[in-house]
Image (cartoon, rainbow, N blue to C red; front, side, top):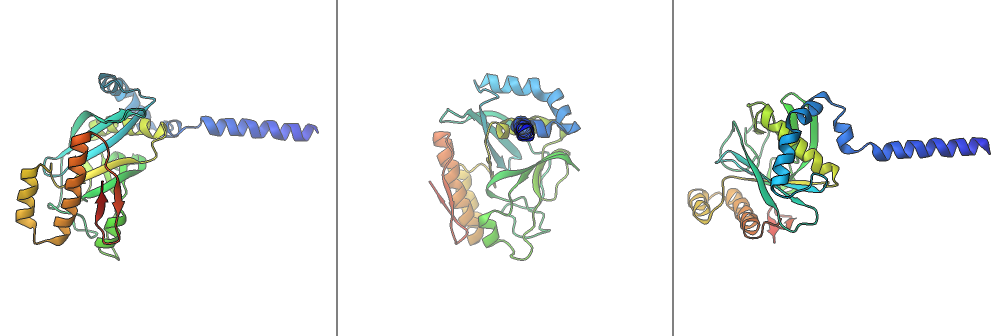
Length: 249
């Protein structure tokens, strides 16, 4: 009987320890994350409070624009229906040309509907947020044998297909994403656009590249998502189709 009670007690302690070992606590085991919080936590809290967003309730959406070299950080409380623009970060360097990534070594920054799938607290580029390239669409349309991978939003200012924003800026964005994931946001969506797809810019892109069905199809889908979000400040629903295109609603 004593053994059984002792076993139960040990299990309860282990369970409670597991429950309190949150994602944020796991990240804080790494020196660079601790340093990022030390340097940027007060700034983060000011940004959130300015938009009436609670750090314990925050959810995040990221929009990247290749031509403008910008990443927009949008946020909201879980109970809110609409996102608010919190801040715009400068992408300090780009590579490749306009258009999606389709092969390892093409230097292209991907374009499409993605999400953060990795947090790297010991990156070669200080801190890194992994993007789930290749996504379902890329796996259909990109090179089948070697589509490439390891695409990140990261620190420093070098790239061969990633989105670098400097060490200083990644500290802030990284801990904001940690807060969102710690609050239960399992997927932080990231949409990467060739440019800000106003009607005029979209028409110019299609006029110039319309003979390229791959680009035109993807940009048409991205334009739908761009317009829906701009009109509603709500995320569109994205369904990946067997053709590699998207049903955007």
